[in-house]
Length: 451
Ligand SMILES: Cc1cc2nc3c(=O)[nH]c(=O)nc-3n(C[C@H](O)[C@H](O)[C@H](O)COP(=O)(O)OP(=O)(O)OC[C@H]3O[C@@H](n4cnc5c(N)ncnc54)[C@H](O)[C@@H]3O)c2cc1C
Image (cartoon, rainbow, N blue to C red):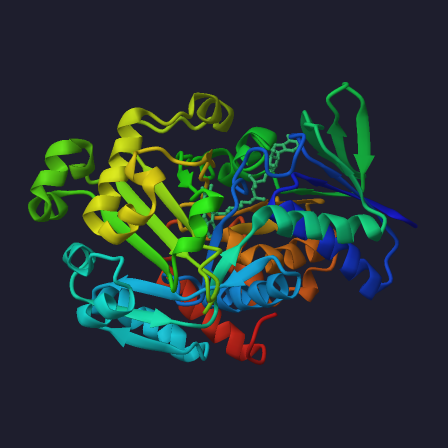
């Protein structure tokens, strides 16, 4: 019998699920009929997968061990599809909290890396004001040359949907699912025209809209996946890209608060909101690994202004999103303070105008780990809910697990992966290191690498 399976949402997670559904069904010999529904007219018109850039790097912050293998697998596949550009990565921070853990990960994953002092930074990357960097986050840096790069979400989504379509999947854009109802025989979806369509199994990959779509169906989806912040991505105009060389992927995470205010009184005098603890900024810069002309440089600046209360409704947030002159001015001053060389070379930023600003809602579970899980034991609905800042990296691999559930084959998923991403895990209670340790132990128990 042909099983009818629907995927709701065609962001990075939904597209990957559709692709893996098609390839796993071929492997297992199952006959399936796949339909993807996407509310927007275009897969990256809104939602978490908007914009041209997702940073991927292996020496990432403490994530469960299973995620590192997933990142590596995703990178390899995205590279093979031409959807990721390798880049250097620099991690900045103090030894105890950031560099030692990053170095451990780099060693464990065989990532080439080296430690840079401020003189190395000044010599290698003269565009940065290394004093500015180092003053922010203490005194050391480490760099890695492998396992890092920039993912192009639009291309990655398009590639996976194309492969799914070639295997027979139907993809409907501009089709917002109104409701999801499960009964003993399967799952009924209500389409925008009010008609019902019945499926044997459904994958919900609706990003931050998960809470709306599955309202009342599980405490985790009701109350957990609610954080939504605006993030501004500034991309350098095409004509300015050619002028820069040897840019690594840098993540500068500047936290607000007293320490920063003490170190940068002039800056804070101009931008008092930055002294608030909850404000933070991320700057990413990257170019093709070893690229001779720096053509691919772009600058991604994520600036989350402190908000009294972030609206939990993504539609409301997206409707309200705007960049004020104050935001533009803030970014320009950040450039001048931390990257004087860059500010000089990128007049559009110096003049406080961004080429393109993209708003992407951030959503996450409190332990910053995605959910990939049946909604309830024996449920025919699989929930895929990404983590705000890191799930671009995991997306290809996570699709495989979502597809395994949707095909009724949870046994294809290693037990530790099932546990780490379970909707019924004690979110917020298990800390990252605890989860990572669990991942390691269970990975060893099931024979090493998890793929
Ligand atoms: C600005 C920004 C920067 C980021 N940077 C990085 C990074 O550097 N590295 C990294 O690894 N990760 C990063 N992330 C995280 C990562 O990009 C996201 O976690 C990931 O893209 C989320 O994908 P998704 O498919 O779960 O959600 P989405 O992309 O939001 O997809 C959900 C889709 O479901 C659709 N939908 C919702 N409701 C319905 C419905 N009722 N019917 C039909 N369709 C529906 C939506 O329209 C949407 O297209 C970033 C995220 C943002 C926002």
